[in-house]
Image (tube, rainbow, N blue to C red; front, side, top):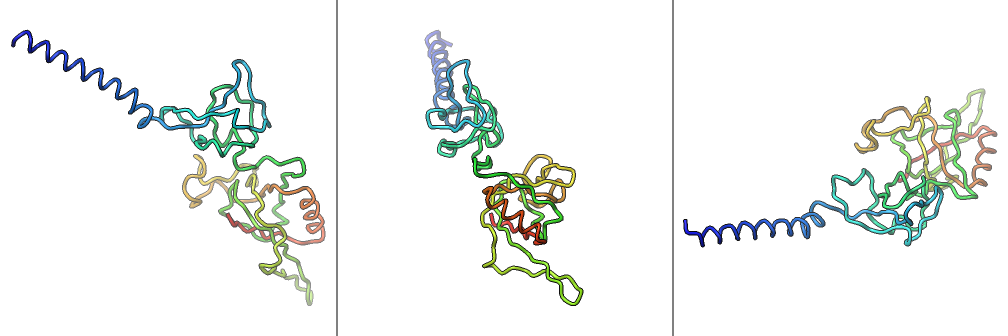
Length: 225
């Protein structure tokens, strides 16, 4: 093989190598093997405290290799604006739905998280999970001829609508999920039997609900979302 041909082949191999390297760094890595996620931006050595309300100045979008992206990472920067942090966060941390309250589960000053004891429940969806929305109906016990029956409400008798479910507990106080790996099979199975839901509502609504329950009413908890 002529020396000039060897030089040409070596040059082509070198060119292909550099082309592949640049192609990986400039196209494959940022566009094929990576996705944009929301990260926290903080001065070095500092952190954003728990219960901090995020602004757009606190976050930015960054490309991260897919293998390094945690489960349930937030990818839309608009989802975190004016949301509350659930933990202290340092610079460069990828936000997930467990680190920031994207579903508004954290109660405001005029709200509370109210547990509903199972003895006060008339009926509840076995498929209920945290972050669901429910309507609450009041069911009144009626006693006639010595027999106690339940007077079911009509659709117009709803007590509260679109109430957020913060937690769904079993009798042993574990959170009910689809499986041990989380809510990942569209509610076909569960890790336990629904016993005590914890609902976020205004404190005034909670106080009114307490009065109804003390009068013997029961709650029909209906999942709507």
